[in-house]
Image 1 (cartoon, one colour):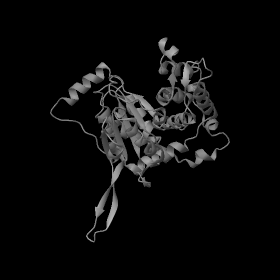
Image 2: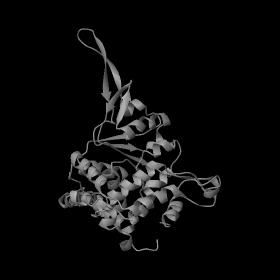
Image 3: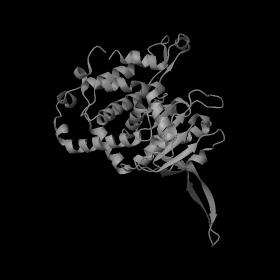
Image 4: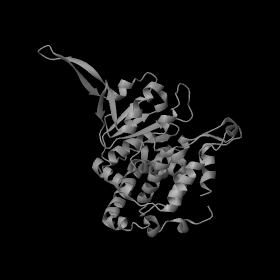
Length: 342
């Protein structure tokens, strides 16, 4: 990446091409209002979650882009607290499911029960499961069996579930934020590629630095606990999601996304990469770049947004062969190498 950030940010004319009226139609007041809302949301979350700014940003990008997130980190890094805080700040109805090996699909989706009225007539009534909410936390998702994991496939993609042949619409908006422990793998079932691809981002949650951990100690072990308040609601979140899709993208950014995603696929039988991202990966990277621009108060995304988000968007959509892993390579290193060529 020899070019500087300033020289790589698309100008308005490049972002719009000949369709200059698209920028004129996008009201400046609407962008300013969105920026103020997102700034207030980040500030409110930071009152509860300390030292995880990048994790907060990536999770917000996931939600305002309309996607689902997979939070991967060791226990005790406030993943559950982050999801609960997001639900409060965004005014979303939230449910939590603790995934265990004995969990059944009906425990997530709901089930039909047979009822009998006073006249003796029998009928089935559907009792909704915890998936019927706006923000679902799937805690330790890889501890449930593949059969149970697959119960979320239709919900995450089509925003509805089918029980006994009858489709049931989920609330709008609907998002899944799942957590996973990368260390303890005993008694777990790795998520299949089809389900991994449903997640917009894989957000790696690392240990906080010393200053942030000191703040955690001082502010969370006293007599009073800090709490977050509501900033927006589900309707305003949907408005942000619509606004993200209206942000123009320059041709250079589109080309960079295509180049990166296509280079992350296996070239031949001898390739280090054994499977790579499909078109959905490119779609997610495009939306993520737009959302990051909106989060930073910019009119259009740059190639730097693509580079910054390449890891979270692509790392769970790729796998390396045995030879590459034996040589000490990992997916993040490969993505960084490919992104550096943009």
